[in-house]
Image 1 (cartoon, rainbow, N blue to C red):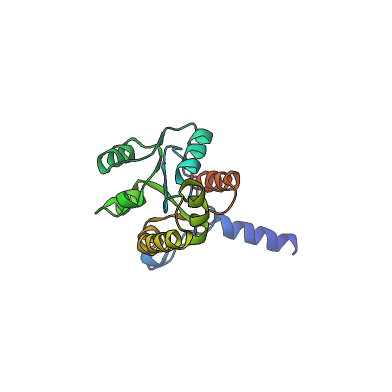
Image 2: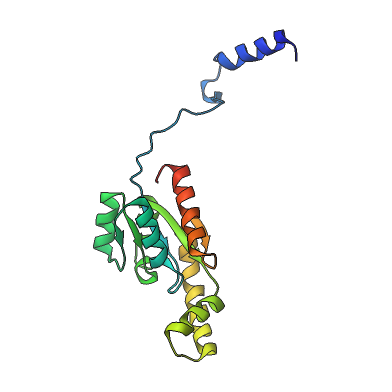
Length: 180
C-alpha cells in the first residue's frame, strides 16, 4: 500500500461520516474504556457437592472480599444492595420466586456444572449410602435444578476441573467484565 492510500485510509478513519437517516448511523472502532467499579457481586450456583462453597471461599480470598454461605432471601437482597460480595446460593433458595432474576441482575453468576456420577463419587466420601440409590437421587436433583441454573447463569464452570484452575477462570472472567 502506498503512502497516499495510507493517508486516505487514516483520514477516513478519523472523519465522522454524516448520513441522511440518523437512525442508520453507527460508530465503528474501539469504544472508550468504561470505568470498572470492581465492586460487582459474584454468585456461585450448582448442585450440592459441586464445590460452590470451596470455590467461593477461594475467589473471595483472592479478591479480598467478604464471603457468604447459607443465605436466605433477605440476606441475599442485602448483599446485592451492598455490592462487592462473594456468595453461594443453594438450590432451595434459587428455586424461590424472584431469586434467579435478583442474582442475574445483581452480579455475575457462575454455575458449577457437574454430572451425577461425579457427585456420587464425592458423596461417597461423606455419606455411606448405596451408590445406585445415591446416583438416582442426585440425577433427579440435577434434572430439576439445571434448567433454573441455566436461566440464571452468566458463566458455566466445569466442576470436575481442579479448584485452582476454576479460581483462575473466575478471576479472568471478572477481570474482563471489570468486576474483579
